[in-house]
Image (tube, rainbow, N blue to C red):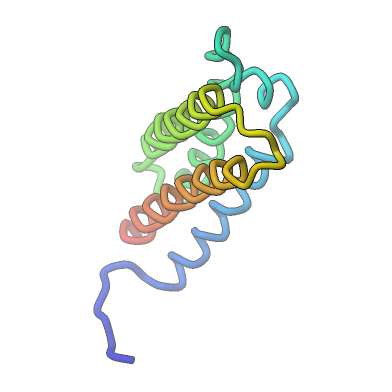
Length: 132
């Protein structure tokens, strides 16, 4: 395989990807309450639960950024905005389609949501690794 020069240290990038994966596991599965999970999917009164949930993502990113490059604290705000858009978009599609969990398209929607979150994390990890 040919060598590719990159300004991003591969080791730091890999460790950051793991850190963002742990952050995502915590925010989406371990720390997300029923109020957040069910509330962010509602047609009304969804903003509070959604922002509480995506605030967990932003807080996790803030902790990672402060540990790696404190000057990039603002990436937490970027993560908050992106996660809010992704999760709200998934909720709107879910409200319009009403796919049951037995329909493969329900799982495609969940998979697309998770894919977009991971692509976001790849970008954030690249920015932080390049800043070292």
